[in-house]
Image: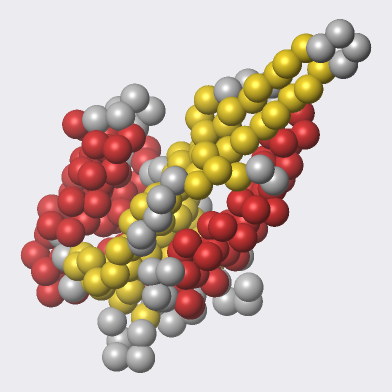
Amino acid sequence: MTGATGAIVGSSVVSFYDGISGQDRDDLFDCVLHADVFASQHFDPKADYSNWLFRYRTRLEMRGWTLINPIKHTPQVIFRPEELDAATIAIIESAGAKELAELTHAAWRSMEINHHADHFFSHSVRDGEMARFQMVPCMTDADGNVLMLICAIRLNGSVDTKDFEFWTETRREMLLRISGGVYRFDRTVYETYREDIRNQLIGSSDRSIKEFPI
């Protein structure tokens, strides 16, 4: 996708279209990382991701983000790699932001998530959590507002192997969970927190952010 960039920020993959100002980019990076660090001080995401995500999203909302359209999704069983890609994009598009969904899809492809899905459905012999992360595409709308989609994705794999007299049968499934929604950024609200958040993040190894083209 020409002109789009992504970056790993804490446990989130933040991506941008061209057109977002340098100040907005810095604020987005800092705000997302601040929410990540804050949530991790209260909950271990590996042990209690649901409460961790609640803290993460609540912190963003307290720092200038307003939810305008939630993702509505019932956990879904996936049987093939191509189903994972199609289901994920359809769910994200249901939040009503086509451009953000397209940017999410581009970042999804750049991370080669379907490659890992291929490996699971072809070779995996282990149950358990496969992935847990947030896709956070950002853009400006026609009025100059910054919109962000929080797309929290969890993948759990299940492998059932049965041994028969002359052969072995293996059934592999993924359980896909997606939550989040589209948010609008209030620059005026965030400005009152900017200096304090930046000071909290100074010196943190987590503040090292590497961008990559999408």
